[in-house]
Picture 1 (spheres, rainbow, N blue to C red):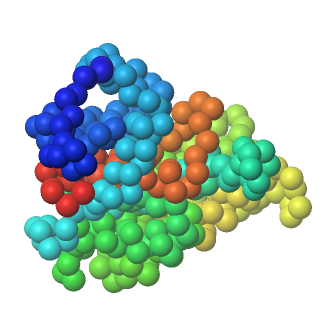
Picture 2: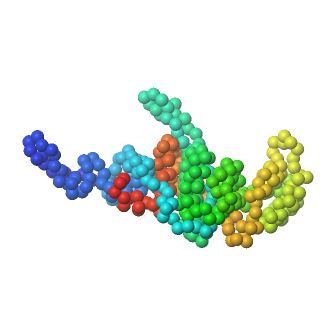
Picture 3: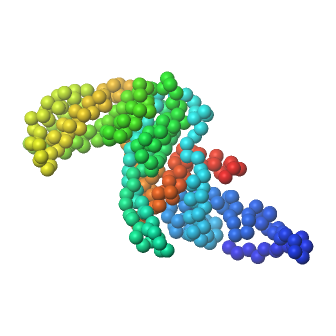
Length: 332
C-alpha cells in the first residue's frame, strides 16, 4: 500500500511537518505499533516469508521480508517470557517437568560473505514447565544455555507458578542425569523426582525379546505392573541373569538393568498414583512440539543462536499468556 503524503515546512528552511505521520502515529519508513504487533505475531508463528504472505492476505500490506524479520526479532529480544513471581498465588503442590530437544543452528563464517565457511550444527533447547496441581494453565521456560542456566530458569519458572518454601514439588523427566541433578539443586527437600514411566518402559521393551522371546509382551506387562507397585527388586532379579557379557555391542538387557538400578530412588510410581499425580512426562514433550519445534524446526531453516533465543521468547510469552500485557505496555 502506497500513500501520497503532504509534507509541510514551518519556514523555508524550517523543520518538516508530516500531518499523516502525526495522525497515524508512525514515523517515515517506520511501522505503527499495531502493525509491529501484527508482524511479530505472524513472524513468531511461521517462516518470515510465509508471514509476509499472511500479512498481505489479511491486511493488504506488502511488507519486505527483512522488515518483518527485524520487527519480530526486536520484540523477541524485548519481551518478558516469565510472569512476575510476586503476583503468583501460593501453590500447595506443583507439577514440574524438564526436557531437552535439538534445533538446527548456524554459525556464520568470517570475511565479506559470511555465508561461506558457515558451520551447521544442532543445539539443545532446554524446556521446562510448571503448574499447580488442579490447574490447567501450564507455564513454560526455555533456554539455549547450559544445565546450570536451565536449573536457574526452572526455579524462576516454578516461583512464577506459585512456588514458596512450603510448596511440595513433583518433578518428572526422562532420567537424564543433568535434569535429576538440577532438580535436586533447585528444589531439594521440597519434593521428589520421578523418572517418566514410559521412558523406563522403553528400556524394558528393548530387553523383552532377549529375556523372554516366547512371550515378550506378557513379560513386559508383568514388569510394568511390578514397577507400578514399587517392586523394582523383582524386575532387577528378572533381568540380572540375562545380562550380556561386558563388551557386547548390542546389550539391551544390561542397559535396562543399569538404567533402573542407577535410578532406584526415582521410581516411586505407587506413591504418585496414590496421590493422583502424573507418572509420565508427556506434558513437556507436547510443549516441545507446540512451543519449540513448530517454529524452530522448519524444513531448511537454520538459526543464529541469538535469533533462535528471540523467537523462543516470543513463543514462550505467548504460551504463558503474557502476549497482551507486553503490547499494552508503553515501555517497548
